[in-house]
Image (cartoon, rainbow over all chains, first blue to last red):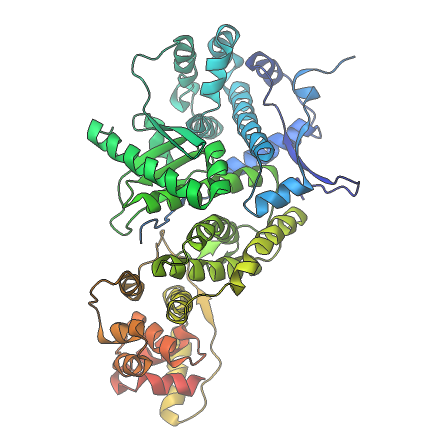
Length: 68
Length: 485
């Protein structure tokens, strides 16, 4: 399964396959974009999941009748 | 050696309590802050992939703008519609488009905008404050990207149009803060922009959320403040669930089609989960108005639908079990709350009616099976076994029902006008309704009505198929139903 690991420690948490790059600068991203990543790296795994999301976006969730 | 940059980045994490709070529709500020970081993370990863395909030079100007104007640049990258653009650009590049055709030039435009401290044309805002709680979101009526949220946007609003939106927003905010303050707090942290869209002729009010645009809501001009309040709650929950699904798989087979209590067409399992989660907050809103028959009807109808839809989800992942379990823990206690007899009859009837009509619309009996049914009827034999197949709908189908409209009018105390069967049904005269529906000569809605008031547990699509195959014989529809039971 992709993502979602529950640990059994005192404070269990759920670890995503998606990496937190929210604090990175665009310069750091650009530098990384020129780097070849091993297929089994966490980033490669994360990017495959992102690609899957784009390939299967589903439809926009539309059709809520808010007025009665 | 010290690892820096992406190599040093950690996975997004949620505590177990945070995932449960999300499932219950009660995320706290810290969890919602994490979901905001998730949005930025996603946007930056999309940018990294765009740069990998289009060349890193496309990021040069924007990167320079980030150095000189960091706050403004980051704010532009964090916008929901940037996510829509980035997803579209990357998809186009992957499909072989040139960087120019994929729209990479947008990054240069963003860099220029980031360097302008105050835009020449001020952005429109919707703002409101009530009882110490405030909200401020953009009213997005000009960005061309707003057309990618799945509904047709209105042209830029006139001053009068913008004033109407502000007036409705002010009143909606008052309702939300007074009635569901914790949900209002969530909304204030999730909602980023409201995109006015054209009204759908098939719906009284319509709204949408894009998986690529966390915090953006496309919604038609509301009929009243309550409609806006409910619409915003509903769509914000779609956004939250989209962020959770970005982090974790909740379903092993999200594309498996099935019954959704909110739509007339078959929905994938992921859509059914979305419906349950969005209606969880809608139900909570209507729960707060026990003195209003229409609100009570909505509460009674949706508490049952949310619980049934969530209970019917199969193939949940471990994270899905935790999320959906928390959702059910939230809604199940509501099932025991008292609702007036007449309102409950109409609410339970509306759910059963919808399921019957959904089956009649989407399940097909093979013509050979229908012919076998007709032969058995004419020979006086027991009905043969028949199975129906799910027929995939070609397009979105919103709920449309004259009986439901009549129930709404009855609860509002408005004059009623409709078929004899429907009028008798909503007034609770099931004998008269049954007599009227027995006159049915093939209408799907009447088949649903007949089964609704007769209470005979028969597959409606099978009864309708038998009736159609026996058309020239003009049998009593109730006799067919009793024969099949």
